Structures are given as structure tokens and as C-alpha cells.
Length: 95
Image 1 (cartoon, rainbow, N blue to C red):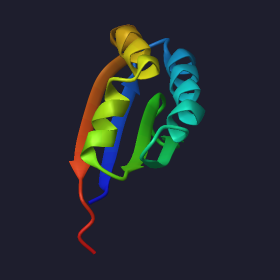
Image 2 (image 1 turned 30 degrees about the vertical axis):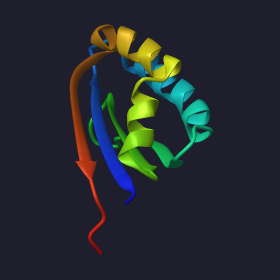
Image 3 (image 1 turned 60 degrees about the vertical axis):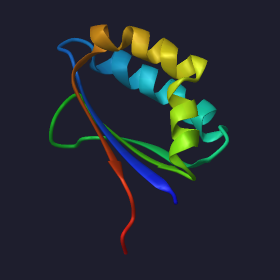
């Protein structure tokens, strides 16, 4: 069953451009990963520095493999410096 991930990140003050660049760098490499059906980065028009990732994976196992991929581990190592708040939701389509 496909897994949908919604991740929301708020940039730290003064880190908006750096966070956006770091998130943008994940898109093409993640889209090439096995099991990735969608990986879309969105920026809020209402809240400066707020980003939303919408992901669809063919399975939870493939998403978990993504979470351990070197490029994501490198991002996570920088996240504390760039991100003031982070929320992640795992969802399944019901209709």
C-alpha cells in the first residue's frame, strides 16, 4: 500500500535561503530513488520560511530506506542549524 508523507519545516531566522537551497538539493536525487512516486517541495505564500514536502512512496520500507540514504542523512546533520520546527505525518489514502 502506498505511503504518503507530509513534512512541514519552518526555517530559523536568517536561514530561509539556506533551508530552501538544502531542500531543493534533495528533490532530484530523491525522485530517482526506488519507490519514490512523488517528492514535491512547496513554499508558503503566507508564512515566510515555511516549507512543505509532499511525498508518495510505494511502500513504507522504501520510505524508510530513503530516510537512511546518504543525502538525507547529510541534510539531517544540518537540520538543527536550519530548521526551527518540523512536523512529519505518515498517511494512507482512503478515497
